[in-house]
Amino acid sequence: NEDGTLKASTSLNPSQWVNLTGQTFTYVSTTSFTVTGDQTDIYKQYRRVKGNLSGSTVYSEVVSSSYDGGNLTTVTILDAVLNNTLVSVEHSIALPAKNNGAITLDMVAPDQTGKDGKAMVSSGGKSTWGDNRVLLAYSPAHYERDIKWSQKGTSVAADRYTLRSPNVMSVNINNVGYALTAQTDIDLSVAANWDTTTPTDYTVAANRAGKDFYVYACQPGSGTVPTLKLSANSTVPSGYTADNSRKIGGFHCLCVAVGTISGHTLTGFVAGDILPASIWDLKHKPKFANPEGMVFSQAANLWVDIYLASGTGTNTKSAYGATISDTRNWMDFVDDGGAVSKRLLTDTEFQLIAAGSNEETNITGSADPVTAGGHSDTAARRMISNIGCEDCCGVMWQWLLDQTYYPYGSTGYWGNLPGGKGSIYTSFQADPGSPEVDNSDNGGDIKLLAGG
Image (cartoon, rainbow, N blue to C red; front, side):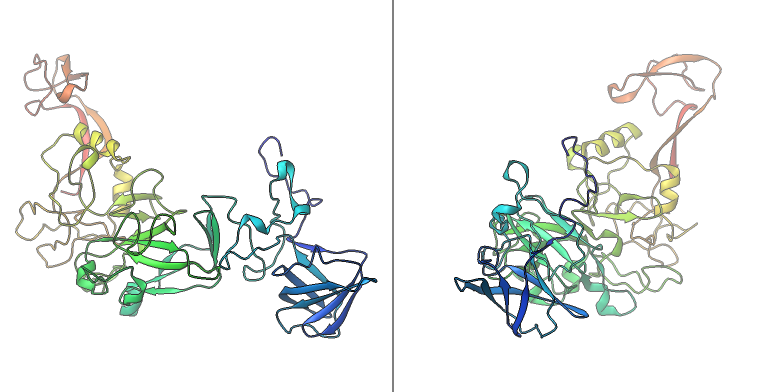
């Protein structure tokens, strides 16, 4: 529609199949039929057909068609699926052109174009992906799937380092469409699933510990099914280019074994296993922030850093083993988060993402660990939440987004905030006349803390 909305008008191709009305179809053999009239312009090679038999439906594609010059067109199909109960044959809206077996814009038949010559594809049909070639290439950013990528399972050790694909998925790679028509499992310990095993062999679990990896859909040598490759490269996988590959997802691997923790969702996980909540794709990821080093909290409905923040400004990140950014004020952390499209957690959010962490215990040694992730408490329990967030409790105090006001002193005044952040009208116990609000003041504007 001109207003950009989609209205369900059943007068416009309610199916991706076209029924050639007014014509008679006759069974010839398991791989051929006749239809009245000269229909050779319709039954082109590779076009998909749907045969309606008495009590069943079959699918194939056209091999050839010929007109006898009288009143019959004989059509030969690829698969031996027909029988003498043939009632009618429908053909696909799309008219395929072979391009290494892939799907291209040339698939659109001249009589199936819409306004301005653009292809029209109806979504009302109920055919399967394997039976219906879907137009993909006209939408350069196209990526669709039925269910999310996931970890294969948690009860069996091998399942924890196996990535499971959607049941069906379609993706555009350099203006060519490809479709995955069956669910596939990608075992991280199998070399063939990686783009390369040099210089680091990521089939070895220890080499994956605390690292991010990416899933690429790559153009195959032939056919319509994309080749799926794992890679540690964030731009393109080794052996491929930006023209024949596309990054469609990724995940983070656990840094240090969790051990046995009763009731914990990650109990038994070892270093190099996939963190289930870290799995992302183009349809399930942070809106603006980089998904590296993050997990999704279903309870809080947000993506959150796995590790305590390291770096400052645009170099702020969530990374295993990186130096924790500390002894800095609330406003500095607000700026750091904003520089990478993140923010501080609220008190409610912190409670939800930290669930499953150690409680009322300290980090081993009761000292600043300096680097992020992989720590245990004084009871030798791993300091990790149910979704994989590290060091939530018992490591150091963490700023929250929430704030309140605590009037401690008796004299109100305007005090300048550190870092050129303006001023605040407040009352403090110490040096009420000071133009600078600093650590010597007690009272007034309060920022909440958690996790200490």
